[in-house]
Length: 411
Ligand SMILES: NC(=O)c1ccc[n+]([C@@H]2O[C@H](COP(=O)([O-])OP(=O)(O)OC[C@H]3O[C@@H](n4cnc5c(N)ncnc54)[C@H](OP(=O)(O)O)[C@@H]3O)[C@@H](O)[C@H]2O)c1
Image (cartoon, rainbow, N blue to C red):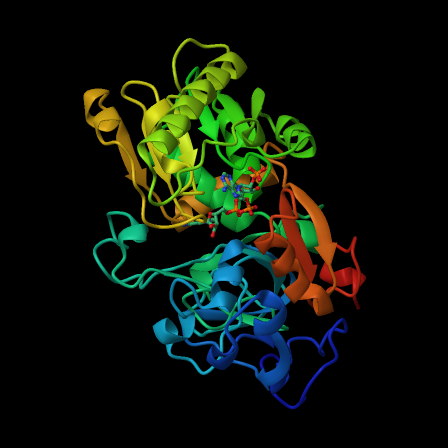
């Protein structure tokens, strides 16, 4: 019977009896005393299955997408997420496809059995920002699976009802789990925050990475001209496949990265590289000016170049700083040429639905390149941490094998 707990533990890969919630579940846990590289910080354990509150939903996680926030959570850097949510353990995972298994008594839009993907924005639903401004301004805004303890690398995950979105019916569990976080982030950055317009050009750092492949596709969809920065020919090919009009290999500019304690000679070397990089952009984009929009996330090493090469009145939209948070740049390039720096963070539910609709309509393709077994979830994060991947990575959780798409195939 729905929601009953008369079963203790069910093996991964087999469905629990319809909508019975096992008392315990399998999960990959991060604990504060073992922060470090993913191969050490992630450990498989069995824990009590959480109970959904009134506005919450328990979802049977079929597959879970890999994001860099799982690497940060494992490392405990720049902060330990366990200090933020105060739970004794952390289950990472901010992307998921799965089956609604139990709904809280205030949830009316979803029911047990619905097949869903999950966006990772949690909000209070009560504050003024949630009720008329922008839910990303919510007093209690949190990223599920990072700032909350019950992410998707476990048999069941606990989310708010408003996080659920329809799963593309003809897409596998693993592919469906791979896209929401990066796609919705790129959507908000380019469409709503930077307001990228038809005919404009965009420089996309990490153009064959998770964010970058979606940024290239979105830019093309609005009629803009994306140029992707990559670090190998394979990645250049991938970025072009997902819509980049041109590519720049950052390895061709070995002196481009900002480094601490620069001497005047080193700074000149970097600025010469930035000028050459700007010319390479113009050639690739077929234009005589810098990018109208720069899509930033590497941060410290690239940010001074981003500000320098952006066109007059250009926008630099940034959502992360993977290479370092303390940014140093020559502000004269910003004010004299009237450029704008725009911060952006994930996306609110309506942006997520619009982005998911583009997938449902077949206009945006997930860029999943690799699927890992449940036992290899730490390895998937290790590969991401060491930049050994392209596009998006996905992991099987309760799906017994790749290629499955619906619950009916499992019973
Ligand atoms: N705030 C948010 O809401 C939000 C949402 C999503 C992601 N993020 C963050 O954004 C960052 C990127 O996420 P992602 O999913 O796109 O990661 P990803 O799939 O690992 O892609 C990042 C790309 O950055 C490039 N890169 C690596 N080191 C670089 C360097 N030193 N200089 C220039 N480019 C470099 C790599 O491409 P090449 O080696 O080919 O250049 C890589 O493909 C992460 O820190 C993540 O946590 C934030």
